Image (tube, rainbow, N blue to C red; front, side, top):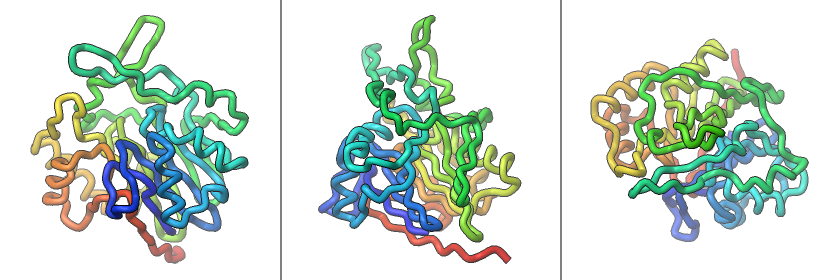
Length: 280
């Protein structure tokens, strides 16, 4: 299984741009997958430099309805004329982030994209064959990210706290590998992994995604006590974690101290080759 981080907040290559966003390319069992499209067309520029032909992408998955994961979708639709785009129906909701001074900034997806006949709305749990599946509606509340407090959705009653029903997670099973891919883990990475166990009867072998531990409004990391508890829970799964994007530098450094080699940072330009031995 080959994985390439097309765009992320950082980059390991001076020739590749970075932005507050996430886009990941995956090759698995003869299929090519694009998970999120970053905040702009930058993912496509980086893809070309990394030898990824977006015209040959088979499937696209959008993790949730925020611009930093779906902003590049118009560019993708221009480049690739066939691949379906899987996302939650609620991903086209009106989502806002509270800024300093009480202002609210729209951070949702361009609603013009709703007219595309390639949009596929996903249920709570969906199997697509070839070891690919999706799940959402994570209900657990263990170590719920504090940064979620500044994220809202517009309803008929006005702005209310986002419940992230628009967030979905991708599962790729190939041989002995069970890969869980999450965009921002707004529902909490521990709760998302718990839901994986509930659905599949075992923990993933590998996890990729942002953990949303950085509070963009306050700029403060999560408390050491919280990070210790998160680390303990993640280590108990035995999985290898590749985190990125919204985890936050200070939070990652603490997680690295606590988790050692069971966690690594996935900067833009990073290429992973995960060996997928056949099950005995």
